[in-house]
Image (cartoon, rainbow, N blue to C red; front, side, top):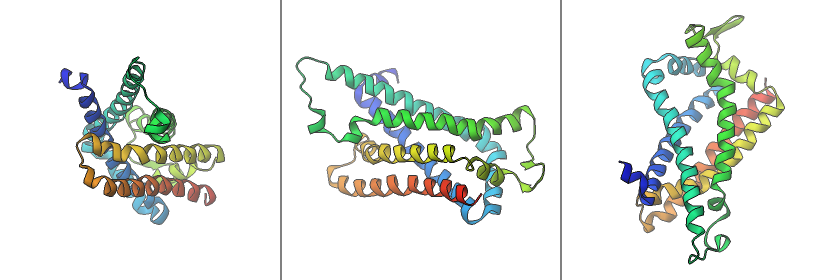
Length: 225
């Protein structure tokens, strides 16, 4: 296993697999959050199930956290390795001519997304951990709120225009990151050249629709709080 991660191909495959995992999670996360726009009661029910189900909390959640940390660490490792390779005297690389702006700046869009994830953890995950594991409250309720608390907590976070602006900006960076990363991930695991155009079309749709959907959710709750 150590030899696998030491090779350039091994690192790229590992990066791609973690990307696939996170893209599936992102789709699932978007589907649940979209319920808050169309059916707040169902959003509360699904959120409570996800927040109290032992399989989700004690198996899937640690895997997700590991996947996020692994993806970003591997991304920075690949960036450092690429920079060192470009520094070799006999290698002549014209980045602007040989690659897109998005591919050359994946490290910066990734850093912006990482900063957003930290904000997202501060907004939602850390308070949730505090409520359930420190205070010991697994009821999913909030004093003064009928039913479960999740919809109320979500909409409360989108009152501030500064926070909403940060979310919108983060999802713009996510779209830029995905526009290159989606196709690149498939190429890393051996997608054939004949399927490249199809993958690019699917990647563009995913990379635009999902971030735009999250932006819509944030703006909807901001203007309807």
